[in-house]
Image 1 (cartoon, helix red, strand yellow):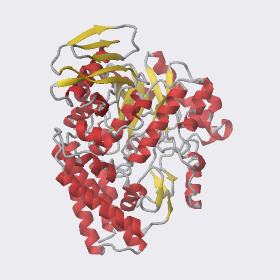
Image 2 (cartoon, rainbow, N blue to C red):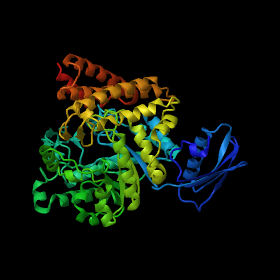
Image 3 (tube, rainbow, N blue to C red):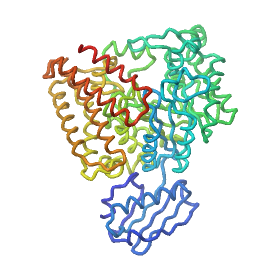
Image 4 (cartoon, one colour):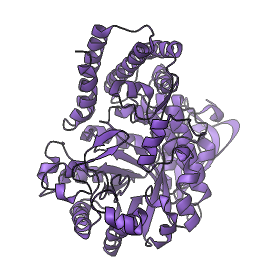
Length: 588
């Protein structure tokens, strides 16, 4: 195979070929350290006689040899003559996995994930935790959640070290504390113990009141967690503090402003942790709304700017949706403004920041790959233009983490590739890469089927924010929907899902998790198809009757349960099942 026809991931930023044949694939590699190369960089040269690799450091050597293995795998006895010069756009290329919204992965699932991260040169892993670490003295919070234990973290740390991946602690400490605050022993710590209204629904308490006692409590959790990690870096969260200023801190917020209340509590967390020698990250969404306060943040900390929608013009949302967004403190005009807007508070102030795009798989069953690609590219463009210190691909599990792990594999691959070299990978042939390296499907069917399934979300006539209309239809989470269902297009979507399921069945992946991948993709597709049936039924299209819908959803739920058990620990599955069972009850 000619060098120009090779399928490589990440694609090198510079690859020159003469079109001539090189030496044999078993030719020994002449290796040499070269401190003049960029960090993590390497030069690989294949001639008719030799294979030589110059590398900047251990990472560069590992990446260069891995690329050579990819070339060998597509050569038939003889390598092509090539010269590759490569190094990363972002020194830190991370992946964050949510393990707190239902799915806590088994060790085998984490091991499979690490193989993928190693393939695409991810060099940092964060496991996002709310309540799923086995904190001593807090058993009531995690006992039914199948949490990560100290032994799990030690095992994972060993695996990460072997691959040159930094394992980083990530524990929320301000918002998203609902799994603590629902227990009587912690209820007094809540900003609003009885819960609050958000997007037209009553929510349980999620935010700690901004007090010194609560800061000490949160720092105590970090002090318990950090000895199990070898890295001194820690992400303390502090995002989406929905209730702040509406309960315990209402009087203070009325006096000095909610931004000041938030910043003061953030400082209660940051300053002691920095004094302990930690490299502290925090989500930048709240403080970004108060850019005048950013210069007050301490040195040594890093804001992580996140947004998960690809840049596009504002949506004409219905008035109730606009009102719900504004009540939550969200400007609907900037929802899809991209990282240029999201990171501006930090770029304008010259404050250290990372960019954090997402896989776009949560609230979707099957993913939203076109949105993910746009979001991942936008993060790389803005991050490079403004000197972001790192690039963190996030994979969330909103409403029960019902998307299976394999749905997230393609956007993880793409995000890692553009974080390594944006210009070389922005048009990466993702389906070919997925088939060759991720699922090892020689038929070429699985990658195309997954790509097609990950695009049906945008073909219903409905517009959703941070979700697929098919997921929304099944879970009845209808607060952020615009447009009107298009019966003809939804009918096509249902037929396309059926065809994709047949293609998945006919594919021949040879990866270690091949059978699991086929089972979980089929289960996810069945749930998405049920969403299509519901949309057709509501719009007056041709759809199964109520009895058939009930049977279809029951069967899809059964497949979901079976697939879940192949990848995830048992604690937490009830979160997503509650969403599905609520819809199933409407048929009874």
